[in-house]
Image (tube, rainbow, N blue to C red; front, side):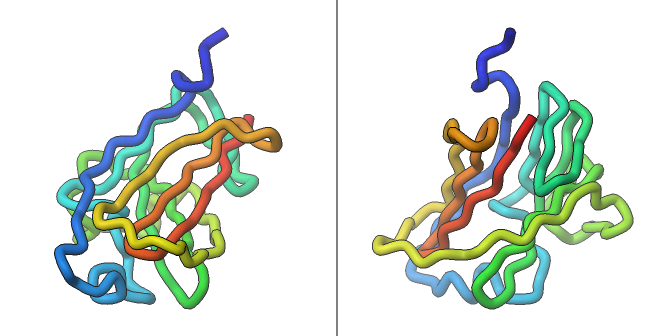
Amino acid sequence: DRGKSQWVRILYSRPQLKGRAIESLVPEGKIWRMGANESTELTLYIPMKVGGTSLPAGTYTMYALPSEGEMTIIINKATHVWGAYSYNKDLDVARVSVPLLKGDDSLEAFSMIFKKSSDSAMDLHFGWGTYRGMLKFTL
């Protein structure tokens, strides 16, 4: 039995606000790579469900599409992609809308962390500026 820390891995670059408004860096209605430089890479070591969609073990790219009060998290079959410039909707394997909450403190660097959850296998918490969100991964 593999430990939960070996179920999933996420690789991403951490952009900084550097005095810029989060809304200018992650504009509503535009695909975002969920980080900086290369698009965020998600590796599932075991099959998991995200938003009701079953995904086989493998490597994927994650994107986000912000809109007022929510963020649609997109899991895509493309890998080794720079930014979101070559994003192809036809390669999407899952889309999950999650509420965007407002944090009390502003995070200078974009941050993501997996945490154990009682009602799911792992929750991916993410935030930048005052944006906060969470995506559930279940078995």
